[in-house]
Image 1 (cartoon, rainbow, N blue to C red):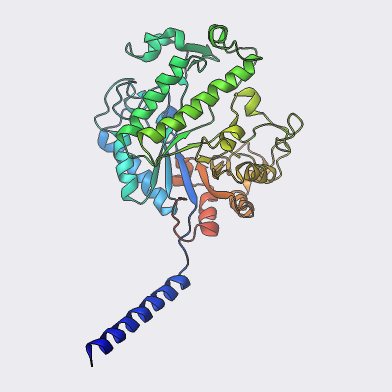
Image 2: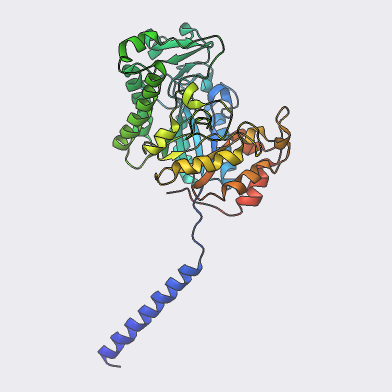
Amino acid sequence: MSRRAFAVASLAALVASSEAAAQGAARRPRAVREMRGMWLATVANRDWPSVTGLSPAQQRAELLALLDRAVERRLNTVVFQVRPTADALWPSPYEPWSQYLTGVQGRHPGWDPLGTAVREAHARGLELHAWFNPLRIANHADLTQLVPSHPARRHPDWVVTYGGRMYYDPGLPEVRDFVHDAMLDAVRKYPVDAVHFDDYFYPYPVPGQSFDDDAAYDTHGGDFADRADWRRDNIDRLVRDMAARIKKVRPGTRFGISPFGVWRNADTDPRGSDTQAFQSYDELYADSRKWVREKWVDYICPQLYWHIGHEAADYATLVPWWASVVRGTGTQLYVGEALYKAGRAGQPQAWQNPAELSRHLTLAKRHAEVRGHVFFAATEVAVDDTGAMARVVADHYTGPALPPR
């Protein structure tokens, strides 16, 4: 065979091989991409560690067992609460070690939980979203219970006591700058896949009490028609500036928020949902719809903790409403699911059916904007004594899935 003939034959074989490979790839199903997450709460030792004061080896073993359980359930993301109450689950120069590790605020636990969680999650093919509570200082009202070096003790003018708890005042620019710095320290140090805020902004209302931010309002609220608009602007700044700073500190790390599931009711605002429920826009000063429309967040994960058919806040009403909010924005929509309610005494009858959560995922599939679900919380994912999570896995998670891009 001549060199020319050999070259032509070789090229033809290469083309045929490439075409066969392409046809084979076309026949193979594309990898499923959807959020399959769980919240792993550390405040008050909700999910981890099981009690304070365990040895580093015991704490680590419990944490790894929860990560392994997430993999067994074919989840792909863990939302790990690393700043539960103005403290830290990593060596932070801004805030003390969390008391939920050792039982004593500020005491070194002997290891680095966040660093370990990021490394071990990634080794298992899981994303690790670092979950921060921006403004909660403590679930009590006694400054002297905080370590002497705590920022709240050094800046008591930053603190508002309300409902028997302490909060940073988001109306102070220096507070917003500080909490951004404290949270971004973790983003700078660790390759977390996302930063995650929960639903706590201004605190949930306590009957008969008022959040005393008079001094901050007198100083900084002059450009606003009323205090409510000023408070919403404070939270908008907290969110918008955090988004911008994440992109500077670690480009590619996403920013997501899991707000209360009702923005506003339609009888209050025609843009709201057909619900009769607590309104986070008016009560928590959290304009979650704006955060999506302004593209400040990469994903929104509303806590739709109601069953299908709920009279005041029907899951079947809220899923399409949130789908309409994200449509065309590029912000991804995940649905926060109340696994903790399944089979629990005192919950409505719908939750006594182990199939209720599976029905949620079936309904959500009708809406292309829904890119997955996050389950509250890790203990119920791991133990699943009601069988609700097993039903979700059997019905919807028969194979693995990659997180959304």
